[in-house]
Image 1 (tube, rainbow over the protein chains, first blue to last red):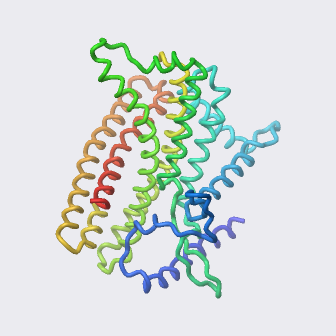
Image 2: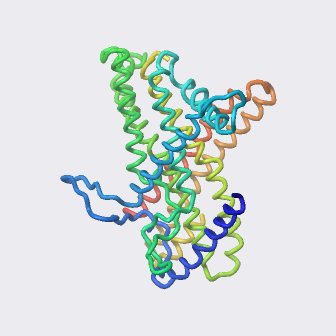
Image 3: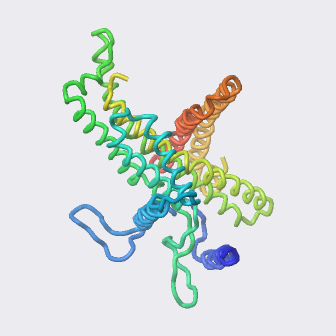
Length: 293
Length: 88
């Protein structure tokens, strides 16, 4: 099993070389921003003005959904026996992080039962999508021939490095926050809690700022995740591009810096961003349920 | 900074070069502030754990929250700079 995995890994390392050999002829100037121009795959599906056709980002989202469901099934649906297996241990670790670090930090005790599933799902889903973004997968717009069949080249791309995906996730939190605040406190009391205790003369200045602040949450929540993943991919792609520069002294520097940065992204940024998004969602929803705190 | 090198290499007239320099300067200054902030967070964390090691577990979560919130500031600058680079 281990030997098979090692062989497959070695093969995967050899494959991109021939792909690069074919691409050099067509693409003369290298620009990492080209990775964010999407081509439609298959037929165009348009419902009115809304474009529903499948492209790279949609494919990554679908894959991420499937993988998160599989992660849930594999690690959470464990037959609990006398001695805990490794699967059970991993599942319990995920659950504990989601409960202790994310849910209990923001949500009040009475709301954990209702909102724990949402924040835990956010955490696992974003983690899986971010992680898929750093594994080279044959899901890119460029094609090359292998044995007469045109297959996509290996590429790294994360669905969370497009603004629409993160904005949709942040919009969900935004809507849930206000719906839950109104449901729990009543509309009057909830909107009154936005007005802080300041002298009456200051109110015309403070209240617009508070309302603006509610919308800035939406922007900061979505742009934080989007910009982190975008900058990470841009930098890694830039370092990979620098490898193919003709100047010989660039090669060792870019390989070392690229690998270090790649490890930093995979080990720290991926998990931190998933955790932050879920924890901030929990904090926002919790602060809407109990506005006094 | 390396990415600005790329843009510079691709630039053909002076205006593009100027925009590239502005982008690099903006990101550089932005990361200056975020660097100070992140250093503060980890420095305070070390001090706190040195004084009360038993609080480490509780503090770690807050530490990473603060780290991510501070680090994101650089990326706001980066997105603003890239938008200015592409649009203007």
